[in-house]
Length: 165
Image 1 (cartoon, rainbow, N blue to C red):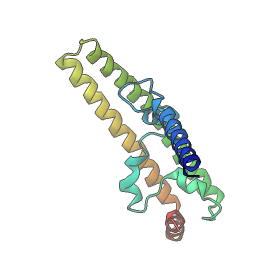
Image 2: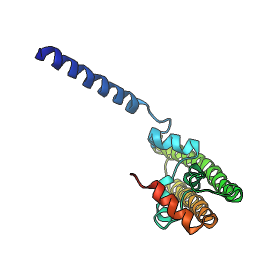
Image 3: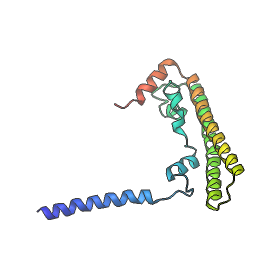
Image 4: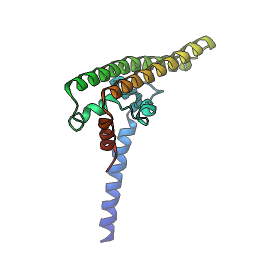
């Protein structure tokens, strides 16, 4: 009785470990980015963590607000304006994400081929910093524009809906 039970448990564990390892084996086309980071930049979803300063101060992300437009009873004008902010943010995230990927590839190539020098290192790291700043600005601008469209009651309702039950 114990051997079949032990075998069944071992089989289930082995299947789960294999399923997890298949996900982690998939490699990013850019060695210096995880597959998750690479896909987020490629899809225009990178940098969401940069919105924290806005969100903790009641300036919500536009995409999150739009998902709850019915629950928040947004007017057509509010929806249009928040969609505009969201589209701007998404467009900038796509542009900047592509630039971050290109810069990571360039840095990796320069180091891998041993062609890095002080000037190139300064150039690419400053460029990378610029892209990070632009990304944060685009996200925070969208949060700022979204907050301007909402009433205090809608913001309170939005935050209540975001809290886990």
